[in-house]
Image 1 (cartoon, helix red, strand yellow):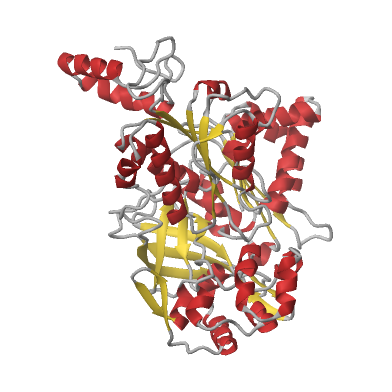
Image 2 (image 1 turned 30 degrees about the vertical axis):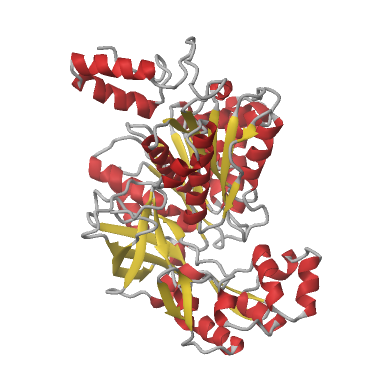
Length: 598
């Protein structure tokens, strides 16, 4: 039997693989029944005239295309759940990442759902960049026959909240599309609004096909179902096995190697995936906040239906208290009699105030606050989960997961500030303690399936996923070349995983290791400088098919490394900067340039 492939069929890679597994198992009678069923179904086939529905003058397609743009995997997860819900209601769903979707096929789509996150300072995620550029370029087609809806994911603590989703929503309308259902903008606590959006989309689809609102209301969204496995909404209580400070005495940094047990969870992961960690707020900060608010710490607070806690418990383990956002100030201003706060909000100029301040600052600066603790805290958002790149291979460490976490501490507006999750790990987690976790898959940061050479660039805690990569390659016996660029402040105190890396270099699992310690020399030296020193060989590796990985700070390191790669490609390839940028963009399209940046 001819094997279906992406090139010889209209199916995605995932669909083709599923069909190739299914079709050989069918009997002739089953195949005949299926062909008749498909012929009678209400979906459009290229070149065929669809049958007119009985209840309308035009064909309403039951095809739904879901495109997702995801950096950390949240949008992909929601897309998969939306697909299951729609398929369960009789729709034929095509799901694809934006990077795998052929933009020219957009004109064939009648019902389009966009699920996309916003990355960094209002940028599209890496796997959405090409599609985003196409849609906003001159080659974008007219989409007069398109119905669409957008689910935008973001973080309201950033200035450009849900910017990418907003851009897609506006652009699709400009191109002639009609909103099937209004755009939803989701904050870090996105499960409930995402479920509401999907129910609205499903209702609109059913209404368009004459199914009626009653049937739509009866549909149960899989986004709201109780999950039988451990996940974001049902995290696993992992026991702490070890918690080690990797930095030497005298270091300016405190980087913790955290080992957790997954025994009994059934959780699995691949190198490149992340672990979601639910942290708790600093008890000392909670005490200060309670003393300012004046309410009793024993006051009963309903954080959600069926979940009642004391005010102290709610502030410590449920509500975010370390970050101020513009939406928060707009909601909380009416609870205060302070005219200064109301004037600040009415002028819409809160950016300068919220920078570097937390809820304690706000409470001290603009009280008193309303009539009840319940009224006050109900405005706060949940503590966002923290995603950390997994620093271990499951094959090498069964039933365990390792993380590399740098403690964040700094001073702002006359007070010491602490990173919520990082100091939760550094100061309060000991062997035997438990922490709520789940695995977050990251399809945008994966080892190649062959002996392909890999180039890994990860200074500081950015080395975490590459420890996982190297462990995996050692365990599986992969012989492909590997090259790591690592950097930190001082060789003596900050060479994370030094013994392991040198062992791997000696036994050949790691082919090359270049390090940069920025504070050991008069002139600061970073990983991008080491890359330039090795530019000829690095370009040779690229020409040999190497995959390049970057992990770490996006704003500075990843930006500098990106520009350095362009410089190296231009120099060694004899290309203009424009052509070098195209070369790197092509690597990204081929999934040979992957980033896990934050």
